[in-house]
Image 1 (cartoon, rainbow, N blue to C red):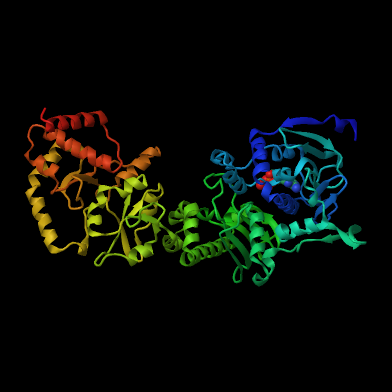
Image 2 (image 1 turned 120 degrees about the vertical axis):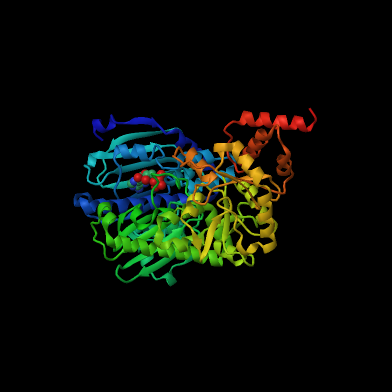
Amino acid sequence: MTENLAASRETMGFQTEVKQLLQLMIHSLYSNREIFLRELVSNAADACDKLRFEALHNAALLEDDSPAQIRISYDKSAKTLTISDNGIGMSRDEVINNLGTIAKSGTREFFSRLSGDQQKDAHLIGQFGVGFYSAFIVADKVTVVTRRAGEKADQGVRWESDGGGEFSIEMAEQAVRGTSITLHLREGQEDLLSGSRLRAIIHKYSNHIVQPIVMQKEEWQDGASKIVEEDETVNQASALWTRPKSEISDDEYKEFYKHVGHDFDDPLAWSHARVEGRQEYTQLLYIPAHAPFELWDRNARHGVKLYVRRVFIMDDAEQLMPQYLRFVRGIVDSSDLPLNVSREILQESKDIEAIRSGCTKKVLGLLEDIAANDAENYARFWGEFGRVLKEGMGEDFANKDKIAGLLRFASTQADTADETVSLKDYISRMKDGQEKIYFVTAETFNAAKNSPHLEVFRKKGIEVLLLSDRVDEWVVSHLNEFDGKQLVSVAKGGLDLGALEDEAEKLEQEKEADELKGLTDRIKGSLADRVKEVRVTHRLTDSPACLVADEHDIGGNLARLLKSAGQHAPSSQPILEINPKHPVVLRLKLEERHFADWAAVLFDQALLAEGGQLDDPAGFVKRVNQLMMEMSGN
Ligand code: ADP
């Protein structure tokens, strides 16, 4: 080693999160320790893919043009295990960044969800993915030697750490490009120093890796295995997706998912198909069983990798999937695209559009299938990704009906927010004479469930969908009807129950409205600008009053959502509806002295009941107290 190189040695501290992660991981993932090999092989394979991709634009990176390969070797006497690849390698800065910090989006979310409960946290860590750091599950010292493709031999980098708080880094001679990771095994890990054991682990987790995973051949001689000077490929080393479906086991599909999806858990479902026609491609798409930590992160990576004739082209090909299906993981392998296709070209390519539309249909079809045949798994999917899928209502007009069919809603027929109903089920159990799909929106499930607007629907046993997700307002604004049935808000416009009301009821209502005309006029006069209109209603059974929005005005809930998001909400006054049978209303007819206070309280409580905020809370409290004192005879 030259003096220059030696002088470059530096010791650095891990980012705090890495220290935390390492500690957690070593303890909680120990029972599943052999996955370290899957993680390191997965990284090595990615590094080979990246080299291929970069070499498309810069052939010099391939140097001696040796074919991509991952090598695994062990040294019994030194108790080391080495995983090498001739992929892209890393520069010094890259090593510091990649092996000293966690640069993933969703990191903060992950750490905020840790509970301190070892079992729960182990599961979370699995979902987060530990990648390279999993080496420390079995090793008490890890040495990485790497050189970025295209750099000179003296630009190698040596990184070493015992997984405590620090790592050392120095420049090193490295003749071959790529990365070599040596694990100095912990006490008690000697079972890993065995050709047959390693082969079994590779077979279990990494058989699907496209690059050959090479080990030195071993032979039985005199009752013991001996290493012979010959290499052998120990994995299948072919692109899994090119094999016939019938020859791929579920376990292989699952392991492949863990590699492409960077996930520890099994996927929920997958679809593997070869598509022929205007565009020829193979797609293997997965629906994860749980949401990644970065689901709501704008910078998050997308999940589908693009290949062209088995050559890896790029990660995160966001053009392959619409935004609302950004949770889908997997690969698309095109037979037609040019090898030098770039992100810019993808953006404008008609061919990609055709592939995207095909993949979208496949995923929606897969979801329909799960929904129809496996309610439990669909409920799981909905819990994890429902909110993302809803975005599709405004994003993908071509598939709007399909997406609407996949939506699930809480309803007055269920006790909890998790028990949901599809629009199809809703329609199938509509009352005789019911023509519309009714819904209410509110800020929380409880606010929706207890909304006064539901009273008459409860009385008549009519189901109402309870929408309390922020995007729901937006969803229903894009969903005017489903299967020929109009969706209507129970808090908007006049109450029109159509055939659900009989003639006698209608006549009685008209009579009551006439009788109370004097009162509604007086209230309107008293509340003046605060309301657009005051009228008698029959939607209430228990409450004295409620607010509704005029047919074409925006509803109270949406107005509040817009406001809280700092957006402009067109101002429109609500309509105050009063319950002609309620004692408070009947009493109000007789009120003279405090009429204005009573009217104001009626309005304010209707606003509170639908989750609104009072303009003048102190005034409301004062009036209520006054009324209470009056009632108690003061
Ligand atoms: P992830 O693979 O999920 O990004 P890791 O912690 O496993 O997380 O790895 C962090 C980064 O280190 C990788 O994204 C990659 O850039 C780099 N890296 C890891 N292993 C290798 C390797 N064998 N060759 C080149 N780069 C690697």
